[in-house]
Image (cartoon, rainbow, N blue to C red; front, side):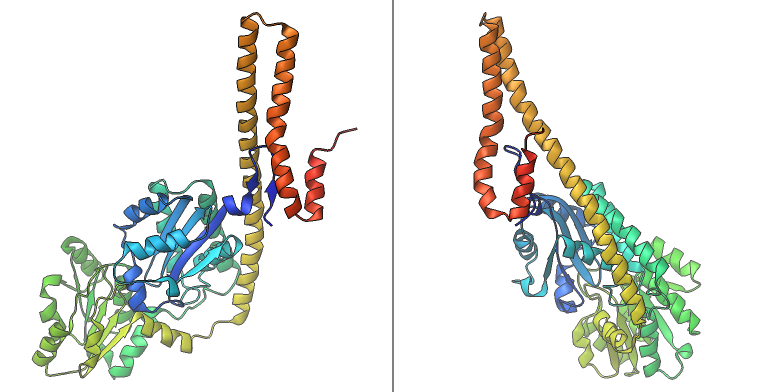
Length: 432
């Protein structure tokens, strides 16, 4: 039985009325071919937030969408079934994404968010990029007026938890990153990658990181290609590499040995036909492609081509999982901090519930008393006897204030345990 507060019409089942929920898919629950279909780019998130906010029972919402996860956090007065229905209806590529999703409520949802922001739940355990991505999701939800007190406080709290975990544990020390793993795989194909030419496609954080990793391994012939010419040229200049417009991609492929892509394109930018043409023109020399895009930038069918080595973000994740040896003590310490912080946030949440309940109860009393007082004044103005008016006022308040409470007490008391029933009875105990 949920915590129950009884004050006339203000009977509140806190666990049902105030529930923090999360529905999501991530690298653990769904393969990349499912995750890419459920991904949202930054331009589509405001509309998605607006649609989610309109769902009956949803008071607040935050939508997180990264290469490894899509998660919908809500302050909701029911379970996640309506959110799942919306997710299924919002895309036409997966008939039912339910088997790939997870649902958490209240403390489990809170713990999950704390684990996400702290890097505990990441494919690369301890990586720091997810914290910035969650902050971006929070900012977008806030700008679109989709969060109020509960989720606002929760996400701000999660950022504090992440800082404490990273400060007080070794969870973020020397994480085996996607780029480190990418370079390791590339080196397995080429004896000396410093002699190879590299093409990076995109202009975000991962692509700029890729350039730095390539250069630190003495790759000097690097070309950057992207859609935004002005931004691409600036990044290329800042990183001392070449620049080319994306429209020349077919020619660029044939000229390079290493290709690293990470764009926000919703469809593949490198197809099997394009690769077949490039391989023919390039005399079938070995080529390594690292596709960090979600949705994917490269059609997976090109793996059937000879001498083409394609690795998706999930492929990299498997390598990291097999080789990554994080200190177990760091995870244990992180879990302890997270569990302690859940209790701390729960104290705030319960206090917030109580404040809202008291506010509702005061409003309920004000509505009753205001109505009775107005009617009493009209009776006096009409010349009614003052004793009769006072009697009316007293009886009306007594009846209105006790009727709903009495009915609800009879309904609820048989359902709750004895200690809780005694607490309820003590509320109405006469003071000596």
